[in-house]
Amino acid sequence: MKTIRIKTETDLSFSLPTQDGPIQLEIYLKNAVLPITEWYGNIKVRAVNCSFPHLLEVKGDLSIDASNACFPVLQIVLGTCNVHELGAELPKLNRVGGKLTVLKPTDLSTLLWAGKFEGAKEIETSVPNIFELPFIEVKTQAEADALPEHGCYNLNIDAPNLEITSKNIYGIIQVNADRIRFSSLEFAYQVKIGNENKSLFCYDIDFSRLEQIQGKLHVAGTDIFFPSLKQVGKLLYISHNSIIVAPELEIVQQFRCNSTVWMKFPKLHSIRGDFTVNPPVIKDQDLVPDAAYPELRFLGGDLNISYNFGFPQLSEIRGRLWNYDYVLPKLESVKQVVTRKIYNRLIEKTLPKLKHVDRIAYNEQWQNYTDKVDDVFYQAKRGFSLSENNFIVYSEFEGNSFLDLQTHPLPLLVSILKMSHDSIQRFENREFDREWDIPEFARPKILAAFDKIWSKIKPLTYEQLFKIENRLLRRFAFQYIGISVLMEKLGAERIATEGIELNYFRYDEQGQKVPFRKHNIYEIYQADGNLLGSDFFLGFGRTREIYAVKCWCSSTEHEHWLWISPEYKDDPLAAIASTFRVHENVIPYIKRLKRQGDVLICEMNQQVIPEGRIRPLTKDEYFGMLEVET
Image (tube, rainbow, N blue to C red; front, side, top):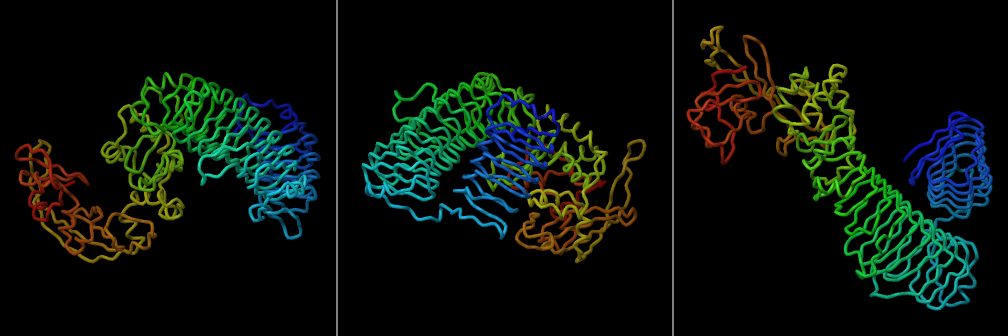
């Protein structure tokens, strides 16, 4: 949501941005007077003695966070309303669409309805909760005539040939009958017409003067015309072979239909949430309008449709564009494009004006369009993607949409990596080049982003790691903490030790092999994995005990730690051998083994194509062929 901040007298002469989406207005200037009559978006009052002498309606949230705010003619707040300070003047406020929270004494004598009320103990209000009110059953004209002109009540109509003369109903209206007239109704909280549990029907229902529905409008299995309807506050839901036309409708919070329908909204310019239409979407091919939405410019959520209803003016989508194969000629900005059908020609032809995308999960079809994207995320490992600015850790089993995943800043990733890599060169050589599957053209950009900040970032500490609230991020970070540090913090116990004399070779200055003897010692350590938290998993099977082998040389006293599986906890030599797994068909042809850290190089007697089962080396195979270790 775009934001306008009023901090000086000059800021009071602001002009609205050329967009149709909601705008947040924040006032930090004392004694500010704002002459607006209605506001499409949120208002936050952060300075004392602010006045809105002509404001009638806030089509969003209102938060009064400073004293003596004056709204002398304000009647409607469509979203939530918070009154946190003294002196708020709301003498004509009669409707709040969302939750009303009042923490300081405030005159609410004109309030007729609020979605929910919460206030301090000394504040009293008679505002009812409509979802707890019983339904009034109207079956005769006499019962209809007895309804108040204005009132907060729920109404259910099952009998035909009735006229309702109420002007404002701050409750739920359910209509399941034919030839019903709401001759004076201008406002309703929620309206449901038809019943999805019945067979196909078509009702003659008149809502000729209805201008605003605060909550949900559900049309099921009927044809209806709303000549005056301008706004649906929460959800417009169309189902079960319906036809709906609303020539004056301008704003909808969220739009959904899931059946064969026909609709036309020639003045609809803004949908604040998602627009979702599940196929089939047309009742009769001949009835489909060429442009059902000729003025729709702004969509605050996702666009997920299978048929092009006509969006000639749509310029901004603040959610996802799902599975499109139709032209959006004016679309300039979208948060994410999600489709299996993207080809370069489609991007050029279907989105000819596209200038900006917030983020994408990279695939090769976007290679020529990455300049339009703020964050191009490349999958480096399973469950881990990163861009030049941020990174994402996710679980493929939880099925989260890419756009919904939490992003984390790149400096945090560097602090995690530095727990394991003491230099960017070591990181590049030992992990980036070997393990990260990033397209070649993007690798220099990613490395440059790391290099720019690497020296400025400190490694994440053990204590900081445990304070990470996001469990997926915490689990990701654990793999970079030094095993020796972690085992020490967990109070690991040494449970087995074994040494071995090895015949090694090293190379002299002339490149000649020089044999020498080396005595290595291998120790098994055990720790309680439960201390890491119930959501932590290192891949050691179902046991909560975790095991590591420490390898060290008695002459150099250098040590190296590796995780091992529980089955090797009693045999240190077998444990170190098990840390390397190779294709079984290769093993008979290995001539010598050369180990460099956690990389095993096999010198072969003959070339063999690896295939079949992969298994760990036995201790006899490993130590029998090992000749170089660094």
